[in-house]
Length: 315
Image 1: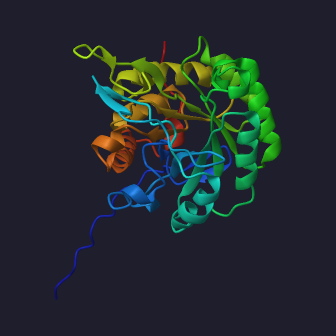
Image 2 (image 1 turned 120 degrees about the vertical axis):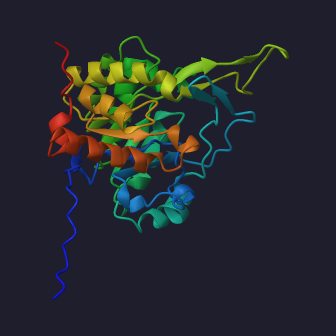
């Protein structure tokens, strides 16, 4: 008599995260602007395996973005000045969101505007829409009615904007903070006081590259947002400082290429992480990070991801 041996059952770690009231099957998300609207990379990544997708930024009306060149590779990173090109909220709702509804994955919609009223109107359009788990607010846009100063670099403007959006929606509200400030914790506190449910940090650092032969900027916009591994130490530091200053959960981002990178953010206090620039170099980067997180927990004998959030030993 032939006796079939049972295959060993692979051990599993609990990667579930409750982020600002949003149930995530794991803490791995896609950073806005690096994963399109999900469908663009679905050939490489099963979206059902991700904790969430943060879609490319959405504005009230369609935007063409900046003229080229709009991207320049830098040591350990890249500069981009895409200019927030997008089809507008109405097209997103009718043509982009239906595809994402096919998946059992949280969808966070990144929104922006050039006036408070624009932000509020976009948030109102998203309210009550099936398939949207929360709103991530890009506060790094210039307020055209205030001389072009970015909402995210003035504490009063940050507070005023987020308070107005809070009144316009019941969806979980996540403020994406700018690193281009003196003290990021002051902006985190303003977001918390304004009624936000969570934070994303960091957004890109402002940078510039010059073609020395032509003596011209590499980007048509002159300056752009620096992302990639080069900014990771700055991002980890800001997450650590912010996690100590406020009680809001944090999505950590900024140069995450591997699971070890992601773990730096989680140990610093992030409840979830977002993979961004890595998607351009490796379309499966999110899944590699996810696999690495589970392997780490099993190797460490840790049963659930919550047990390592904010557990960096600074003594």
